[in-house]
Amino acid sequence: MAQKEKIAGLVRSAIGPGSALLTLLLIAGYAVLGPTGILAWGDYQNTLESRQMQLAQLQVERDALRNRVNLLDPRGADPDLIGELLRKNVNVVHPDEIIVPLK
Image 1 (tube, rainbow, N blue to C red):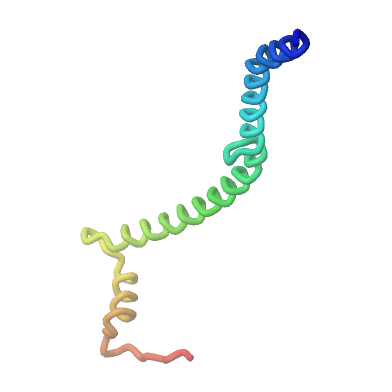
Image 2: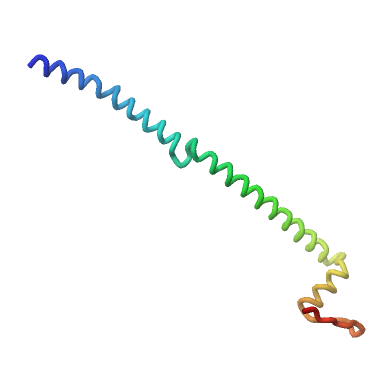
């Protein structure tokens, strides 16, 4: 009987540290294997690099569009660009121009 009480006392005294150790192990496992853990860091780096490439491409496109908008400024529009847009979108040409269709 005394042996059973001794074992029960040891088990009760080990419950607190055991649960603390289990909690620490779970936190460490989540830090390594979780969605924002150490193993996910490589995926984040790859995603960051691809997004930076997309950003650079979009900035080039934005700069090209900004240049085109500046050329269409009503205070000093580029006549060549206006002529190109008229021919392309409205099908307007000068009477002395010859149209050569390309296939």
